[in-house]
Length: 422
Ligand code: GDP
Figure 1 (cartoon, protein in one colour):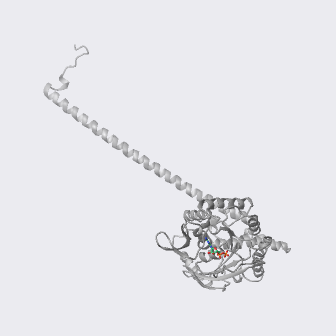
Figure 2 (spheres, helix red, strand yellow):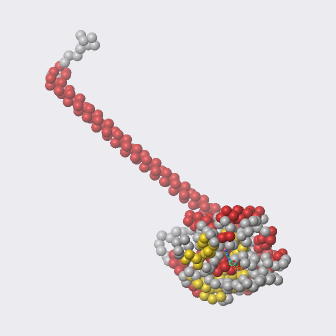
Figure 3 (spheres, protein in one colour):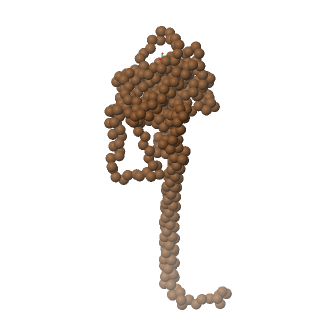
């Protein structure tokens, strides 16, 4: 259970160290050198400094942004609203709210940037301008600090993910949604969400999801999808494809508790035809969204913001300002280094494949040898059985011979007759 200790009190801590393993040179230790205690060190460090995570929420008034954020972090990050007061927007506002969230000794310095007014202006063409300005100015601030101070000291306010709320209309994306997504997809990790999915049937959701996915793909919009790594176990590979299969997430947000069918109190909504549970995976994709955002892929979101989206922005900005970036300094942008990295990865894959094939070959040889041994044993048993039977037959014949000789004298004294009995 997480706990928001205070609001509007963001810190500057930034735990964003990137460790690169030379993959083809990986050593598996047989002895314990204490490396497995590293998560404990990380935990202590996190306890002191905390992780920074900045999330932007975009969508029209009343689409369910604040409810969902409060539900994800199980805290009152957004204060309750008075819906009786009509809202009129002259421009899109940018409203950052900070909260410190602690769970089992891990501190998260969360900043949620609300964008009231988005999609609610008379001329919505200008809706996205303030948002783009906000994303860019946070990159600029990082760039300016990076030029004069060490990375660890930088107050990192870059946006790590943008949750884009889509109304549960069941139709297609609107041209406005597409226009906005195209403006921001190269600047932030874009995560599309169908909010209030309890207002649609399962069939309507599936149809809506596939129309949204088609619109996203046909417009060349990049959205965030967790990537499978060569170090991922089979279990985590499955978990990633499970998460990816739910994108765009159709979610339900609620801070209320209702009784489920067994009488247990659960987070959910009481509808005229029954209860919809927030954390029931048969009811909606909330659990998968939260898993991706918080427990499984938060660091990946931060890493992409730092090494892809920001680097992209920086090189363009420097180019615009007349600087030519020395790409050899930035591994991600140096084609030779990138190629080398790719070759290393390929070599590692080939080595792994060779090991797998050798193992498979050895397994098959072992299997064959076992079969041959079984056949040999079976043959020996058959040989033994036949030999016993023959021995028995010989013994019986010998007994008959002895009996005849006792009656008629030795067989050698009986004169053999010719074929005509002469
Ligand atoms: P925001 O303006 O985008 O922040 O929207 P709110 O989170 O304040 O939600 C607006 C209204 O929608 C409130 O009355 C919420 O209780 C309701 N709401 C939020 N999420 C859901 C949901 O998943 N399902 C349903 N049925 N109502 C929701």
